[in-house]
Length: 244
Image (cartoon, rainbow, N blue to C red; front, side, top):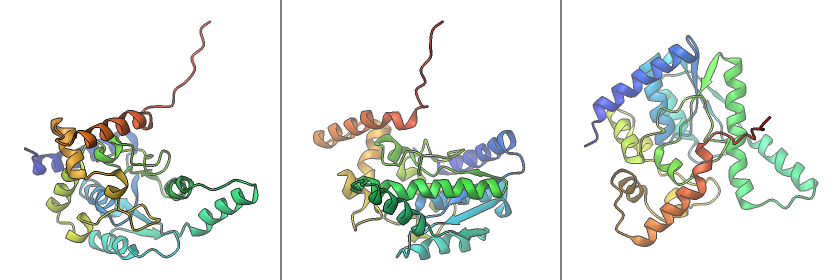
């Protein structure tokens, strides 16, 4: 029932309209991981704005085995790009915390790189008349599989209401390389995939989001629990309002 041609066309127009209102003449700045989300966002922005107004930012953390996928994407789209290795920044913060007596947790090591990447994107954006793209999709957001003020940040979000399966469909419709659309995301620290960490597949999650059906009651309960626990990530910061 997903009309990929219509949704793709509408998404392109939405990006154009957003830039007309919120950054006329500005560039779209996108962190390029070489996976489906950043690839599709970059391709949509090229369709909407033209390749000269889309800037890719490649941010490896030291040497990354999938760095060639990021290079493949910017070459395929023909967009200008920068490479900024974040290893020194990540190591510097971790070392400073360790020197201060902080016991570094695994979650800290997982979430620090995305936050430094987002800071890098905004620094580059401000130097290049840019607006930063959020590349998260609905499926990840639904269960909180994103880093607040990391990959969950940004100025505009073309994929925020689209599931993983829908994002892939758009990627193929736009003619993106198969290996990038089907690239299996990992946590960046181990060989575990996103689905390994979540404990269920994106296909199962997407079906539940769109139809409300999940045959496995244990998985359904886990998805519901993660959704409730992580809804705060998608809401504005709560502000105290005093009464006079």
